[in-house]
Image (cartoon, rainbow, N blue to C red; front, side, top):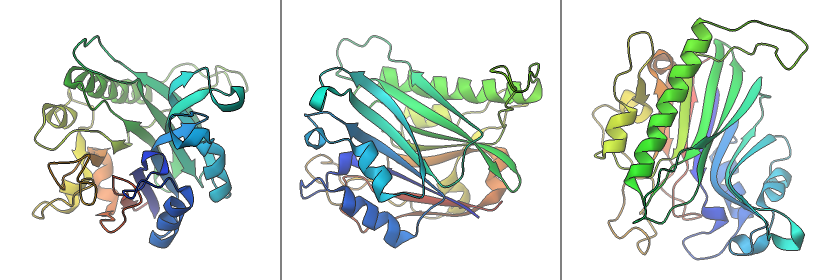
Length: 283
């Protein structure tokens, strides 16, 4: 089994306003340590969030048996003690990836919205049934225009990887041109900042051209008749005035869907304004 947890930890800030990465780690450990932990909103040296702490280093200490791969969507000067002010997504994995790619997502001009840069990190993992592209992301909240462009880019990355899998380039082993084949099997998780009724959700689950596996909402594959568990707004009613609803997902390629064993949401913790979500795949 391959277990993946995704969680927007709001830089460790709980609903009580306290920033506490130890509490985040306790929740993850109590639920059962996953093979891969995908976190969003991880801060580094930024005095404006998390008191300027280097949360990447702190999380590495809390999860010493994991390799870490940080994708900074923001990278600026003026950090604590002269460091870089960074904010982004972090993957912690107990399975060494074959390849790691960081993709900056588009932010087309939208003068009426506030926004931040967004990115997704892609890991190519070896599993018992082959390889899997695992992506961790956090999409724009305030600009639907940018959010739709970011979803479109994710779809293009999936199409690109499938084409590279079918028509791989020349291989030059033991050089920077060594071929690492990207898999047609893909899972992308994170805080997508859209609801199931949105245009962005409809776009990410829309049909591809023939030969490219469509992306499915893993929750719907496992629970087609059950109400969706909310992933935010359960405890934090100040930020989420519309109450409990869903913005965090696992989307996976159709050729991976038969391997889904379980999808769940921890609806009990208030360690962040979002809830951790978990998927288990048969290998």
